Amino acid sequence: MKKFLIGFVGLSLILGVFAGCGQGSEKDRFVAASVEVGCAMFEDPAFFEDFSLVEQKTIEIFEEYGFDATSEEEMLALEIYQEDEEVIKAVQEGITGCAGDIFGDLMLDEE
Image (cartoon, rainbow, N blue to C red):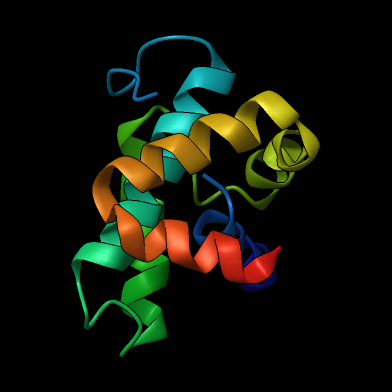
């Protein structure tokens, strides 16, 4: 579970739509939760100071969107969205909306 969350947190930073909490398709909820986690990283400078808090915050956000984030099986099933170009674009756009130029600059550095 921790490996997935670490990977997911990293993915959220790299990826870049908001859907209502617990509403919409699984894909829309995944995008919204991913954006919220990504934005939390940019908005809170202390976000990574304690990994247990990062893990807890990620779980809380995903549960707000109707996922059983304590279920490794359910969270692993969401990996299908990590390769989905539509999801990637939506998350990138969502995170850019809250992180602005900081996220845009990071994405340009990656290319």
